[in-house]
Image 1 (spheres, one colour):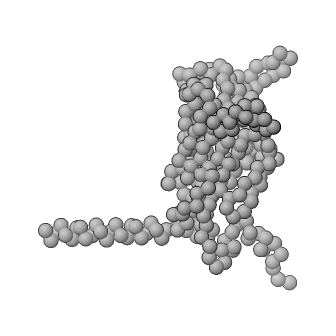
Image 2 (cartoon, one colour):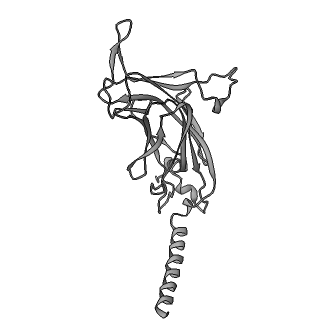
Image 3 (tube, helix red, strand yellow):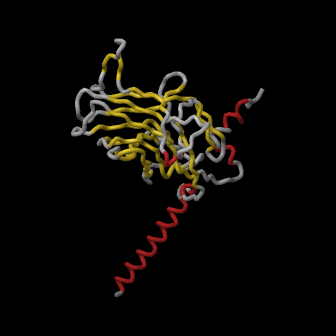
Length: 265
């Protein structure tokens, strides 16, 4: 009995220490200010704006695609070479999101027309590029809990993944879901807790950056001609940040302004 009591006491002490450690480590990770922010509506605009809870954000980028080596190349009716996939904005939308009445509204979704010469683990990458034409990684506001997107599927056995980069440069692959259904559906994914979005040192916030979406075809599925549509990519994120005396000195957006005219004569 005496040995069992000692074991029980040790277990209680260890549990208490673990709870205290968890609460004191990277304090802002345990917050409650969850906000839904649309990162991309896929409506055809190149200027993207949102507020991350502290500052308004504005980015200039557009979307482009690349595909694996068996992507089809053919000629159109005028003899011009056409390389797949083809990506463009189309006047279509999910009724569950927008509704039936679109009078006076210019509503578009991003459409993908793809073809491959053979079946297999083919892939298509959809990613943003900046005004200079180089890949652009979208800063994801706050500490992201979930991300979701509307996608139209034609019951093809394809898989959609999202690639994000953490503050240490490590790329993580988030499975958004399968396109093996008909019509529009909301694909939603949870960001695993092992993907760090906070640091011990200031600034505590360590934002993720969105790299791209990847679509995989499965070897048993047809790939000779298909269409996919995307709309309304958003995140559910925690934008709370603790305030303290001198917190502006830990703001990476404000710091360059404070030092712009600094120095001594």
